[in-house]
Length: 309
Image 1 (tube, rainbow, N blue to C red):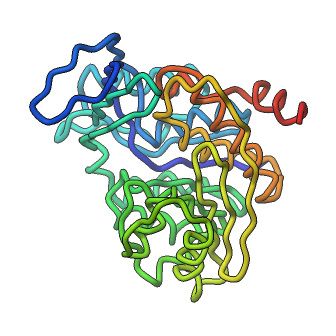
Image 2 (tube, rainbow, N blue to C red):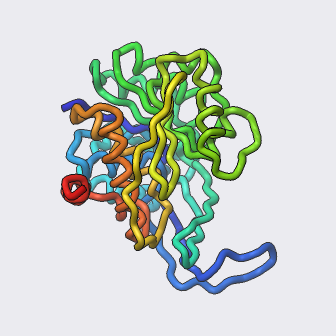
Image 3 (tube, one colour):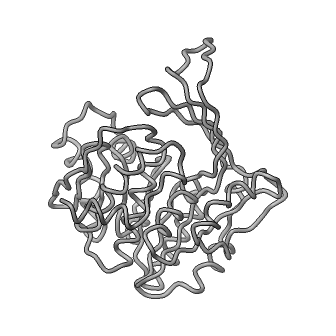
């Protein structure tokens, strides 16, 4: 079994559950208020740990009370926090989340302490990385630091996954250091610099292959919400069927459950397509619970669905 390193935001989520999202100038009374650990880095690290795989989080929190909240579920889930440090220059990051009656969400966030991550933090963490280990990272971290991490990981023979959220442009030379990109539909079009269309799988795969055409070693696993995902290379693509669920409570961290389970499954020795099938299951299980890290499924739950198919 290989190790997974997760580079991303470690935040606190302030989530307000309401019947509908407020319009500009409108006040809507909430039905519930939650203050929970969050951030893509924290969520994905918990998702990996609950799949039974050794995982190290790489991130920063502020020297404040929120830092303890932000790391609490990671600690309880067995995430290694050797490479999570504190800073006095920024507060712990925070996301403000609105969740409507359909389980849909709208999110605004401030990265806070995550903005202070630097190359020295990355170099220290990846010193213990070995060939075949996995680096999973997001754009919550400043992109130059992410690009440095990807290059450093590939130099050690590690497998690299970039979840490009929030979407940012990726320099052509950086694709040489990425094994798999995991955008959603919107992020594919943002990466390509073109206007998003209504769901059109042919257009989506064509756009993705346009991004990958000069980078045959890089591939994409594009998440499609309740339609599963599609795996795309520079010259082919294949749909991976979803695990349908009727009980959608909160979609906030479904993508993080997907990414964490994908990385964990690869670390356990499965191939990409089998790992994406497990990732789809993890994402579908996560939407059945309220909250981010609380909703990350355990390996037993994922295998029960996988083996029952």
